[in-house]
Image (cartoon, rainbow, N blue to C red):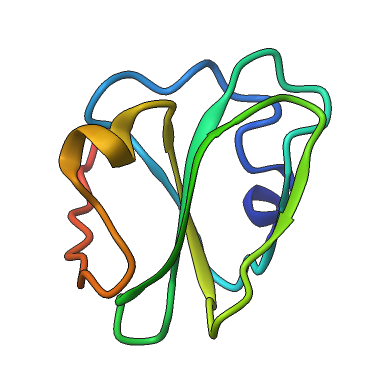
Length: 96
């Protein structure tokens, strides 16, 4: 629960290939962040419902279009991977 509320606010900048999945996050803000991020909103089946590229600090966005979860990525990751609405993502968890 606390990770969903805080998201990346108190974490170091994500590196290429990393992401933070926030289940149940339909509203995302970048208040107090010092760098931009990409957002990929997903429905229950992990279909992409919305992609927000290069969201700057001090902004807020709603998932819309049936988005249920949000994947936060380093800025430029969504474009580099060609991620677009309708894609189905497979989430891989990596243990430390």
